[in-house]
Length: 252
Image 1 (cartoon, rainbow, N blue to C red):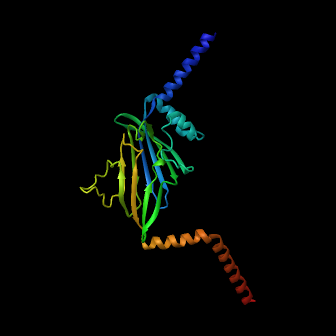
Image 2: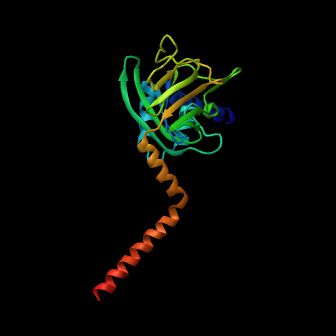
């Protein structure tokens, strides 16, 4: 009896492994859109390779309303995670979308989309009138760990998009795209990409941002609101109440 039970358990485990093991991650693309307030919007796309046996399983999981991100992680593996993390806090505004199944030259594929907001990605200080120097915090990386530190794994790419009006000061390792000019100057380029096996442990990215006069004015009023926001709201309510009472008295 025990031998039959053991055989059944082994068969069941093989069936589960067969059903789930045929879903493999073939590519990971991480795109970071840097903001001028030190945050970044991160969009990650995982490309899945599906066999005919795994299509029905993936379709059922995708249509299941109560199938959580944690369950998807158990299905796909640890690669389905945030690869940009805030070492001093959590991520925000997280959304996850399993895409539909598509046909490709290599068989059936599907895409998993993960989007979230991360703080503490860059630090900045004002170096001149409306000029800010930004420094990238390489501790936010959460990619493959090797003896030399973090690296981009196989079939993995990283893209960083700088704010508008940015000018690169220093960057390492040299991006795969775009190719710098003869003097290692990237000009007005604001989109940089790295592919597999690039070392990230000594990653460096600094850039200047020239703020417009309009942006400076908006930042000034924004700082006033941040400091005196509650007081301004109370004052506005008081002025409105006084005006209503004044009009009421005048009409009487």
